[in-house]
Length: 417
Image (cartoon, rainbow, N blue to C red; front, side, top):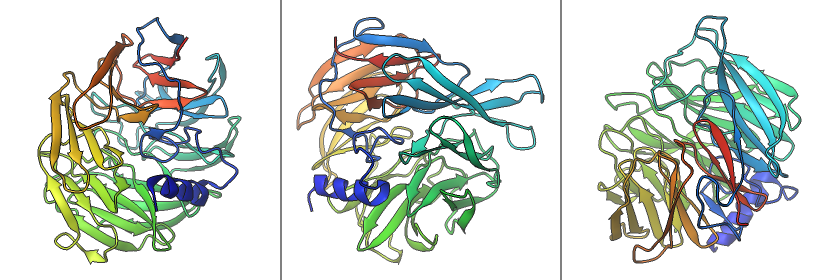
């Protein structure tokens, strides 16, 4: 089946035919891989030119926005006086066209009983929301997970995911077989859970079997993959990437990568391979055939690359070419079937945001808020560099004919005039 056919099947299987595929419904978009079919996006802007609006967002957070039916949803954390050093964990809804605030809802307040320590580059609201078209799901790591309706009414909350954050939370929710999948890799315990999306009850909880890395934490978002009639959730963790049955949590296969930990990039799938980054200290990129059973480290690893691999940004697969941007600003294009390097180019800057592909262009957002736009292909071809004048670590969203960028203080709508 072609990639477009796989995407269509995946959208129908997991979201239902009633949901418009081009809504930006979760981290990395409708397919979870950074791709969009939207056209007419600008390739040139400044902090004012081709900026339809810029609004200030309260609090501090690095969750990415999502866009559904001309509404933007995102989370934030606002300091409060009581309890001491506590944060009000909130969800916000904006009109995507005008930037007008529609609602702002407090979901949880940190109580000081769980880890309040975060890395200087992290926030108390870093996981990206998710919608199934009727409900909005938000996640704040060990501080809580919740389901809201699209008008902000809380339907259920879950505060049962107890683990010691190291540097704060990071991984976002995915939805598979009616379960919200959460990877919970703390310094004390490492597990993956499936939460019933209708009730908020834990359906399954599976302890990691391979936490052999010297440091045991990670911050990943799982990949959902339907293969041979079975839905896998593929979750990188400390020491190994592990595939679980989405319905039961049964471990299907695993591939070890040794000392890898603090894993952040979300895996991507294509060409019969799952592409996984192994995290700190020296990241590797592994291409894995996902049809195995048990420990398939030796038998199902198709190729491995150790140069230019990101710690933070997720990968971008465009047909037979795999693109990545290292934290230090080195862009690389690989042959996705063999791992052979096609080109590499130092762009400069530091990168945390995951790239996207839309309207024939690759968009790369650095931490200074500058987007580098490339044409995909077998040679490096830079189209433009566009600043917003504000620090940025969240990833892009696309919707309502525009590109949305969350900065440290502001949310921008980038649109061709």
